Length: 114
Image (cartoon, rainbow, N blue to C red; front, top):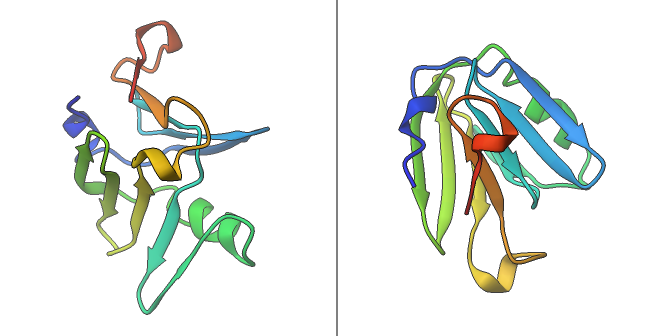
């Protein structure tokens, strides 16, 4: 699956929805069923750690410069400020059968799971 349409797009919203996360990049919508880690300059934070929410929300307004979705391996999104969001897609790290979904149009009906 190609998520390159996110590149050059500004992160518009970070939505915490009960047990998953939605990232809106203009029209494209990325839904993650597992919590990504946030790699900041010098350290990283993961779900449940202090400042996790703040680190994610601080990326609102930042532009995604590089994206990579390697099936059964990892999802990474790098922003122009050097911050990287990462999510393992390995079977042993998943909480369920899918790790997330991507919709280029932002419509959940168009979403493809990964």
